[in-house]
Image 1: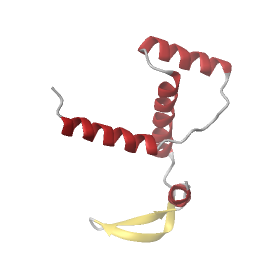
Image 2 (image 1 turned 90 degrees about the vertical axis):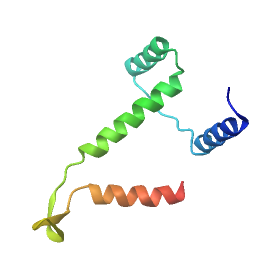
Image 3 (image 1 turned 135 degrees about the vertical axis):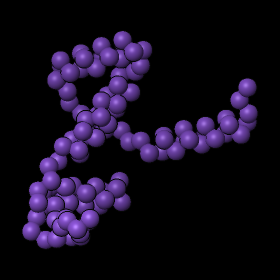
Image 4 (image 1 turned 60 degrees about the horizontal axis):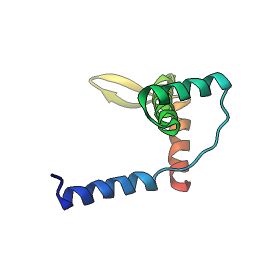
Length: 104
């Protein structure tokens, strides 16, 4: 049996999750929408949950795929090896993410 403390903690967690959500409208190709609807039907979930999960996975994978580009400046030495700055898109992405997280 769930105690009131557990229930209140769960409510608090759900409230925090809800406060961090924002609505965003996007346009999809017809085939992509069909696939989202098919996932929703197959798993018994709503389309928004499926879309959110797919988007989160895609973002995580895209972040990991940003290539490291060796810069010319040494930023530290690890185990006797020089570690060079990233001259690729990662620094600009991280900076934009930090800036936007303060304004949204």
